Image (cartoon, rainbow, N blue to C red; front, side, top):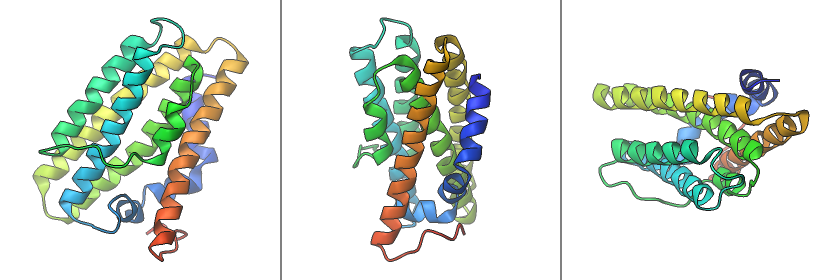
Length: 206
């Protein structure tokens, strides 16, 4: 097992979840039905600030010394920059449920696995946000979100590399996999529950 294989396996095993999280309905759920540019920007900022908060806590209460502190610190700072880039006055709304799951992990393999799951989910959102602004005839905003998506891809790759450095046994990879599963499932469960609360069936992906 390596980080690239894990990412591929997660995408295969959660194919349905990713197809729906990467659909236009995910924007409807993220914005509570307010499909406007400010709502999309606010959702992106909230997501980034929620991640930064979790990472800050991990740096303050490390699991194994400094092995992952530098990465977590870098990713937290990047997340705050992303929030500032997508919203003029970024504020942290209600944290998405995936961050409740992410915050509960304590070992380095689990934390990194959970982060990988988070990046896979957020990349689906970012792709839809690009599409939203293309459809909204706002090419500058679409370019901003293309830049965000590229940054997220690079950060995901750093997490993959860190997993390969940290995971030394099958048990480590199992912990990483289970954590990633939990984060993806939390994001998908919230997507389903949000749409159902608005009387919308989440089954269709368009």
